[in-house]
Amino acid sequence: MKSILENRPELARRVAEVAEVAGYLWQKGWAERNGGNITINVTECIDDDVRALPPLSEPIPFGMTLPRLKGCYFFCKGTNRRMRDLARRPMENGAVIRILDDGASYEIVADEPVRPTSELASHLAMHEQMLAAGNGYRAAIHTHPIDLVAMTHNPAFLEKDVLTHLLWSMIPETRAFCPKGLGIVPYAMPSSVELARATIEQLKEYDVVMWEKHGVCAVGPDVMEAFDQIDVLSKSAQIYLTAKSMGFEPTGTTPEQMDELKRAFNL
Ligand code: 2HA
Ligand code: ZN
Image 1 (cartoon, helix red, strand yellow):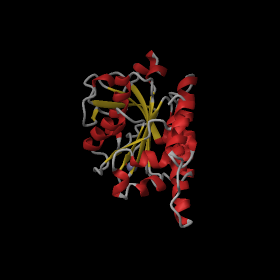
Image 2 (cartoon, protein in one colour; image 1 turned 90 degrees about the vertical axis):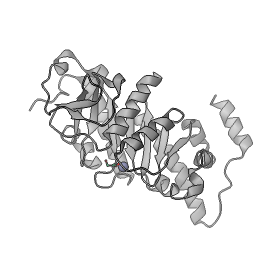
Image 3 (cartoon, helix red, strand yellow; image 1 turned 60 degrees about the vertical axis):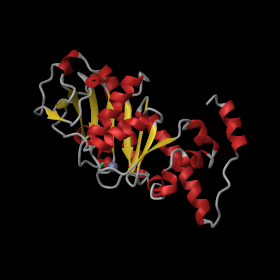
Image 4 (cartoon, helix red, strand yellow; image 1 turned 180 degrees about the horizontal axis):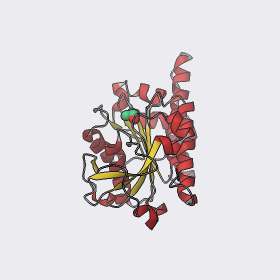
């Protein structure tokens, strides 16, 4: 079967980048079974031949109305598919979907009728928000990092910006490369529209959002940058818990050191 990626080098490159990051999520231990999902907005890689492709599915509502996504195309991990399989065979474990003119439903267009991620509502709401912000972001990742999820089981860390300041203070890179810190979404049913709405509310302020007792979402210009944000935060969480397991409370960088960094990196 001919793949939509044939003779479309830019689309192929972006899907390959998703596959590479999917492999990292698995290697990190953040993607048990079918855990986590990745979506990228590939609209600018789509030509008239793809626009003319007949759908492989009936129109499927995704539970929200997102007018900016009308006519957009996304590559999405498939629901119930393993991240480690997406890494090896992206087009068998993910699909390209087209958002229909109602802005409320989609159809699958290529390569196979793989139903997209169960968190599609959250993902598409994040993409709508990124288009509204005009920030050029095209990628959204949701994954289950052990250290960061563990931290959301402590109510003290769920207060606004407590976790941000703690993680920033563990190593300078986190302050520099995750400059907005992370938002918190109180526990909500996975895949729910409620979770999607709460996520985009936090995204107005942050590029990374923790879902209490569940996982993390990150957005960015591309999938590699979205991954990097989660990776630096997880590194900080690892330093915190390593210090704690050695039996002491880490001191963290001082407010003066943090300010110095802020000035140096123009944050
Ligand atoms: O896709 O992680 O939140 C599986 C999940 C749902
Ligand atoms: Zn999840």
